[in-house]
Length: 255
Image (cartoon, rainbow, N blue to C red; front, side, top):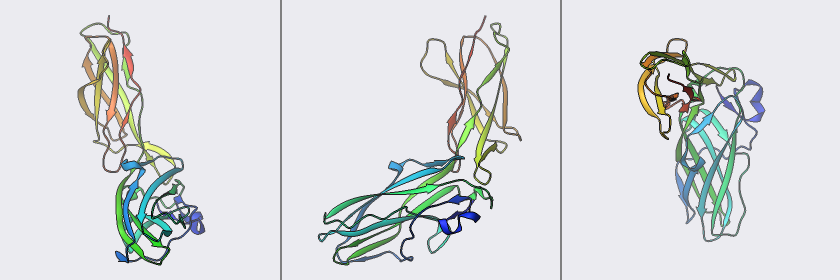
C-alpha cells in the first residue's frame, strides 16, 4: 500500500485529494511563532479498513501578530526520505488571533496495486506555522500516531446447542484483517492469540476462559465444559499494526 496525491492516484493504494505543503525543513523557529500542540484523532489510533477513512489533526500555534498559515503533513518512514506521505486537504489562515487551532483533514482510501500492508504501524506529523509578520516555526516530527489495519471476528459459534451440563462444548470462529491492497478482509496470520470469554447469565461482565491461537487459515477452535447458561465471545487485543476487536456473543443454554 502506498500513499499519493491526486496527481498519481491511478497508481496508488491510498488515494488522497489534497494540497501540497512547502518543501521539507529541519526543525526551525524564526521569531516568536510557537506551535504549542499537535493532536491526531484526540490521541486514538487511526484504524483503516476497506473504505475511505478521514483523519483529523489539530494544530495549535501562537504569535502576537496573528497567524498567516498553519498546515501539516502525515508521513511514514524517515523525515526527508518518506516512503509514504499524506498532505492535508487545506491549510488554515490567515487570522488576526494571537492563538489559533487549525483542524486539518487527511483522507485515506484503500485501493488496488501496489500491495503493501507494511505501512501499518507508527506514523509521524510534520507541521508548520507562519505568522503575519513572517515569523515561523517548522517541526519535522510534531507528533506520532499508530495507523492500524482493521480487524474483525466472526461470532463465537457454539455446538451443540442446547448442551447437557458438564458435557463438552465446541467453540469456533475466525479472525480477519483488512488487506489495503485489495480492499478486502483476509484470514489473519497463524498464531495470533484470541481470548475466549464467558458471561454467566445474570452477570454484566465477561471473563476470559482460555486463549486460543489462530490456525494457518485464521480460524479458531477450542472446547470447554458447559456448566452454566450464558454468552461466549471471542476477544482480540490487536497488535501494533492491527486493531482490537470483539465478536458477537453466542448464548448457550445448559440443560
